[in-house]
Image (cartoon, rainbow, N blue to C red; front, side, top):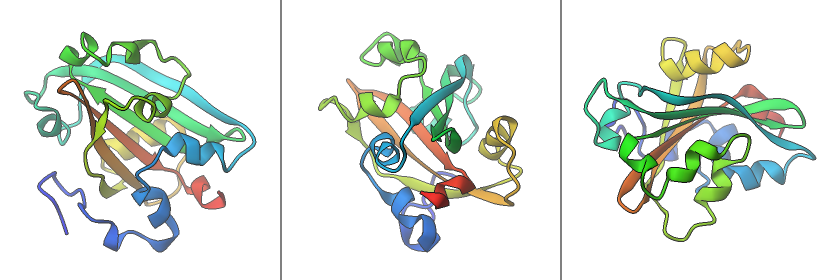
Length: 177
């Protein structure tokens, strides 16, 4: 079933069985990855003010084309990239409860998201991103990808009425975990 968010699936029913548990798990992805490898690391790729992707504006209540705080990182297990993470925060959130996001560096955003009881997570949405999608292209700029498509999930986290969109693109190496 498609939701109104431009091709994102609202239910995990049609997800591939091999990835379903990774994509639909509502717990901390950071903690799950850490439990599957000896060495977990967050590699920052880019942070700062940028334009969000076209299908992200409506979720964040932003005007199309406006700038937001964007953080992109690669999550590595035992030195192998397994997830590309893309987070988008409207500028007003930088002055609110999310102000510490700009200082995360190589620390995991997931540890913050799941340690603060004030943060509320909205439902997950899922999508197969193909080579023409901006998330696939962003992932491929950082990591050689031979797959025709990659699976991604996203959800909005709210803190003090400020939304933060977190999208995670799962790389083929996730299958080994």
